[in-house]
Amino acid sequence: MTSIAPEVLRQYQAARESAAAVDLSGRGVLAVTGPNRQKFLHNMLSNDVQSRRAGEGCLAALMDVKGHLVALMRVLVAEDVVLLELPSDRLRVVEAAFVHYRVGAPVRFAERPTRVLGLLGPQASARLAALGLEPPAEGAESHALRSWGGGEARLVRAGDLPGPGFVLQAAPEAAPAILEALLSAGVPLAGREALDALRVEAGRPWYGPDVTDANLLHETGLLAQYHSATKGCYVGQEVVARLEARGGNVNKRLRGLRLSSPAEAGAAVLADGREVGRITTAAVSPRLGPVALAYVHRDHAEPGSPVEVGGAPASVEALPFGA
Image (cartoon, rainbow, N blue to C red; front, side, top):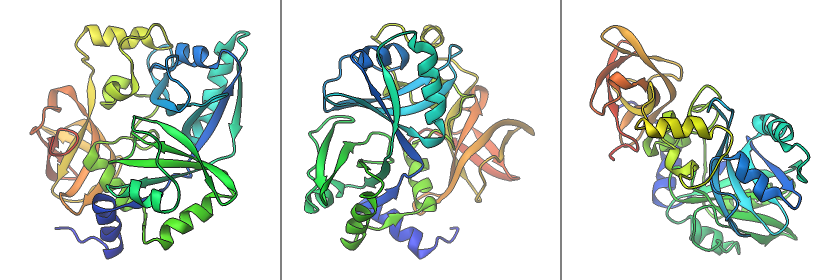
């Protein structure tokens, strides 16, 4: 098996067996205020925002009218604000789209200075409680403010991590102390290599490396988590509904690849000598060896389909691996 650095192995094992921290500083928070904030977001996003009460949340997508994904985000409803956590480089794009559709609605948007940290693993809840950060009530994307070092951090049960876990949204000046407390308690910080291995195994694509504005929600395998089938109109809804009526058939789908040798993001996936896909994230899993996430043409997307990457044989896998 391809060798794995001892530190990467330690981080990976901690995330699977106990707990590991994750630096999510590439994410930011957009605050949405105003009396009609939930109604406005409900009409914009793919999931049900209107029915959420304070302390509840959901994962959702913002699409354009052609169904292309402008951003994937976490929606957190609080007493007087709705907080949207999404990649920092999409904040201005999302805000511009909201301003375009606002048309006089009494809603306002402002980036909220925030450092986002993650904690994943079966002992994540216990590790937080030991630091005095009691986890919020059970429920997808449930959240609560917790006091920390004279300030506050919002603790969220996060459904977009590769395994059970939480994100903490803290003021930039408070986050380093929280991270240091976790490290001092023996929780390692998982780096890119360990995190990518965990994400690929779990079939957890993220916006940026695996999902872009060229993708449709049906292609990503995230429809069930990011979409409400019972809500009314929203931007891109006609495309989603049309695909659902056709059985969700799209030309390509995100799949796992089991590789015979390590690959790189962007590598071509071949079948019968022609390109049928591209790798988005590649990793070396301590459990499975070289693996990857890739969009694969529907003609070769069935699990078990033989393909080739970098001149070496590979096979298509269902996500998550072992499903």
